[in-house]
Amino acid sequence: MGETLLFIASHKIFAAAMFILNTTLAGMLIQKMSIHLNRHAGEAMGGRNEEKSLYRKCKLFVSRSIEQYERKDREAGIYVKAKDKMKKSGYRSEYAAAIYLFLKYAATAALFVAAFVTNFPQVSGAFILAASNIFIIETVVAGRRRKLQLKFQRYVYKIYKYLHNQISSGVRVNDAIKTVYEVIDDRELRGILIRFAAHYELTLDIDAALEEFRSSFELQEAETLCVALKQGILTGDNQELLARQEEIMFKKYFYYIQAETDSCRTKGVLAAALFTAVIVIMIIVPLFNDVTDAVSKVFIN
Image 1 (cartoon, rainbow, N blue to C red):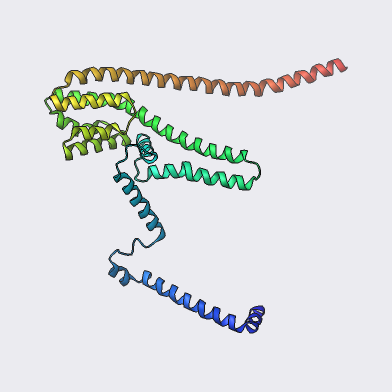
Image 2: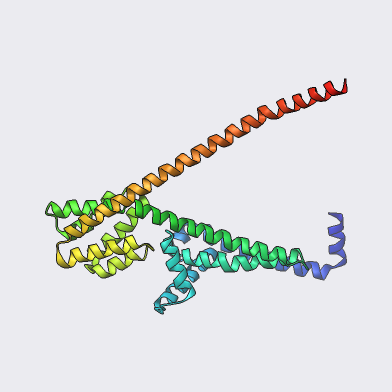
């Protein structure tokens, strides 16, 4: 405190200028805070001040940039490819493609620069860190895509069975398609089928609805299902195709379950063998050491 007073006494003009400046800034800050904290002022704004924060401005800027890019109707491009990749991997957020590109390129570049500056002049660590980041991102995305594809392959026979039973019972193909999501228990697949049914019910455009559904998968089974659905809409009779596909997909489902069972059995055997090996080693090693000590003592005596 004494040093502060001594500094003020020695620099009176500077201290006075800083006092006036700080007082002005503090007054402006208090005024701003009182406006934002005042309930009546917030009600009077009617929600017009919700976009004033930096986070909301950045979010709005990213959203508008994405919308402007999509309006250009580009058939190719890194963002379009990333969006399609994210959609087929089960990521349906509006910002999924932007987050993916940011993590893969911007975050990778930032990690590379940080590692290079930290370990200068060695550059191998920076390359390894950047490559590891890209590898982890691609591995996670590929794992999600593979998981979604396996889900569809596992449940697709139920879709054929439901459609075949409904149409055989006299239900129109249009109505059967609109309710096909009810047979699926998986939340992710159910959501895709709900969007497909809603798109078709609102537009009555089967091609656009099927394109929306097809864009969620990268499987031949999805393409075959789209063909069967379109044939049912155009002809009104696709029972034979549905019955044949139901039989084929049920066989695939049975093989999938059998392969999964064999895999679980193999993993169980390997785990049991590993634990047995550990127990055997824990028993044999002390016995071997005791035998070695006993033999050495016998020969020494």
